[in-house]
Amino acid sequence: MPIEKPILALVAVLLGFAPLAAAQAEPVVVELYQSQGCSSCPPADANLNAIADRPDVLALSFAVTYWDQLGWKDTFAKPEYTARQYAYARGTLHSNVATPEVVINGRRDLLGVDRRELDAAIRAAGTPVGASLAVADGSVRIAAGSAPARGADVWLVRYDPRVQFVAIRRGENGGKTLPHRDIVRQFVRLGGWFGAARSFPLPRSPSPGLKTAILVQTAAGGPILAAVKL
Image (cartoon, rainbow, N blue to C red; front, side, top):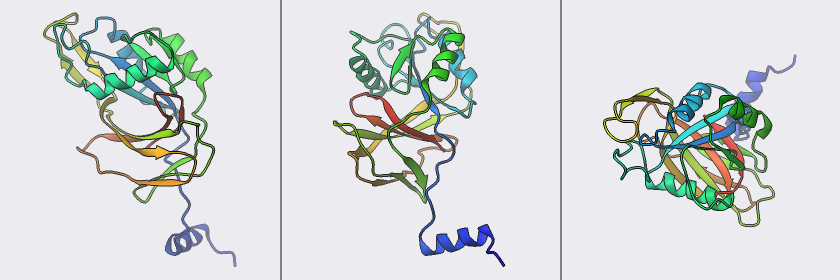
């Protein structure tokens, strides 16, 4: 009599040979850099909100700080998100940063205000390629492979999938109530990857309701090599 697959799986777990498994196929990583003080951002916010539930997309909204002195302090902004956008600017040879900006798989950028252009860019991007990433048993694991010459960073992202309505009282969007989704609330570098297999413990979430994603990305704001959302 053949052994049933569930029994084989149980034996593998007991012997410590359980295979690694990511939550699903790797998504296209779509990062929006925006601010509640920016009057040009609501259309890009709306486009990101509209794709937030797509299983083939990891939509992340990063609130930047450089609008905070212009009438309204963004309620979600952090300096490290601004620093990430500047890293992208250096990588794409832009002279400065601006909002809104959408970065796809760390490889190309666009305004994000035109939904058809955004959808076309996502279709053309394909999934990240360059590293094999999985999460299992409370650990993030990267298989041995060919790493970029300057190495890669392993990032933990925690974001809020709920729609959050923010009443803006001053600044360019004063008087409006703006809906936000997939706002990034935690962005932590777990370590580096230089080609050898590596494992990192998965930290606990700082608050309930947040979702988790892991990125493997060429150092200094380069292309994203692998991504998984849990």
